[in-house]
Image (cartoon, rainbow, N blue to C red; front, side, top):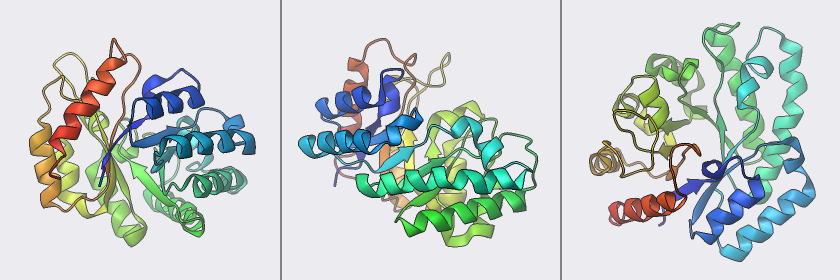
Length: 262
């Protein structure tokens, strides 16, 4: 089973369809689709993506919405009406994901400190999760620096509230930026981790291509194998994280070798 993939976000600000096609042509078997604009939810756009998906035989296991910057405002604010008004947009994403055969939807959540307490945050998240389940979608919380989700204790509390509806996307670079070890998330929440964003780092940069820095991926994969992790590993980088696009492909090949016996 191929557990490795790449996010189309690596090629931003190229258009979403251009980035997706580039991932297809590079032979990345699993592609996380990062949406960047409302028009990309149109039927024509999705039809074009599906045509490319089928032509190259790739899967789209996960989707990242363009609203991450505004989730504190839309989903997790003290103005309740705005939460209910925005749900139709999320439903549209879930409809699209159903067509793409994707099941992981990634949420950043509320920035620190936020305007609502944790319990209301969890309640709202739970309501969104219930809608997602109607479309076969798992709404997942990602650990993100400067957001409540950077904290393992917050995520542990969230899991206690949501129970089986709690799903975590672990991001190495976000853990690094929050000065937390990714192992702190694995040790406490391994049975809830369903998806992982991988990248590397060095003493100067918190995000560089995998296998170019200091992170020990062999140890990382061994720990996750011990915890029976069965999700995908998605290379997710910023366009300033590398000098040449070939670095992404080289990282993919190196990680692919490390995962050969996973």
